[in-house]
Amino acid sequence: MKSLSITSEQDCGVTLLSNIFIDYYMKDANDAQIKVYLYLLRMIASGQDTDISMIADVFNHTEKDIIRSLIYWEQLHLLTLSYDVAHNINGIQLTAPSRPCRDKQDEEVTIPESRQVQQVAAAVAKTIDYEMLRNSYTLDDLKSFKSDPEVTCLIMVAEQYIGRPLSSSELRTLLFFHRGLSFTTELTDYLLQFCIEGGQKSFHYIEKTAINWFEQGITTVEQAKGIHHKADDNAYRILSFLGRKGEPAPQELEIIDRWLKTYKLPIAIIEEACNRTVLATANNRFSYADSILKEWFLKGVRTKEDIAALDQKYRDSKQNMPPKRVAARSAYDNSAFCRIEKRDYDLDAVVKALTVN
Image (cartoon, rainbow, N blue to C red; front, side, top):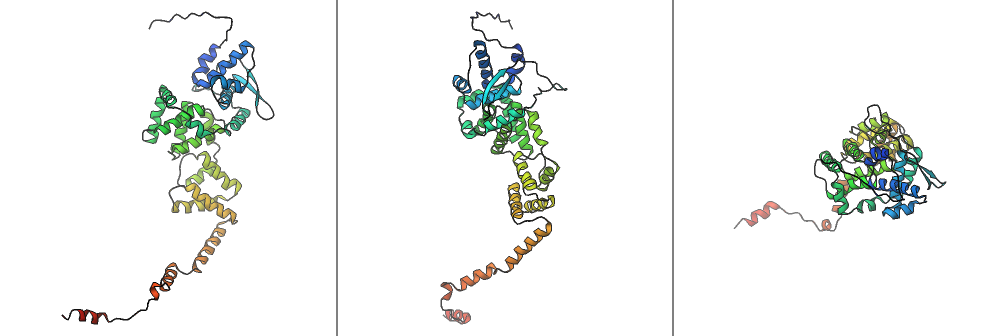
């Protein structure tokens, strides 16, 4: 292919952009993130001040979009944010881009975590109307999203995971992950694997997990994998009690933590509740077991003897109640229909009288 000759007629207003940014950072950023970074360079070059609201107005984005973009660049160490006592951003300092450090296997950029950044991201996330954001995308947005080769590949992979073509609503949810939550295609791919390997193919469940990750400030696959290490041996044991394999989902870990840390129930008591759950239902087992354990906790159960005592109390109460059939029969016998005067008939004599002729 013939080479292109590139020339320029620069005026006095020039904004310099590092080649390192172009080579290593620009390809992984989304449109909003790139626009925000370039605009900051423009403001610095002209010596002008700006604010979150002004940047949002310039690009017709929400202020939350701008804040998420700033947090993204801070995690990559291309700028540093400062905050006031209310955790509002009150300063931005750009730093010179440097070639990202890679791990030993040279597979993926290693991005150090910033606790403060994650806390601010979580605070921002709690003010977002996720449903409104997901439903705000137009058909043109969806068409543009699907035209990306990486997204096309992601959709094919998602359909293989789910086992069927994705609906337009599910495609819109993927777009929400990409633009609304700033998930990369790699992170979305891992999200789908994580949920489906845990036995959850519902996009409603997958979306809840994605929002949970976003609110924890998770932006990379490595950070998402770090969630797994929060599950201790007891969590995996409890998962097996309920007939499940793989990794517990974040919502399931919350329920398990409630049983272990809030209710402070012994593992043997949790196992007994899970055993009863497995025998009773194949669906919504965590919710079913949670209802049992909540009742036992409120009744002060600490040992299997306590459970046996509750079971015996329940059986005794059942024995003291009149049997349903007896009660039903008694009600029937006392009904107006059955209070009609009853007569005795000789059925053989009636039949004989009818057949004489």
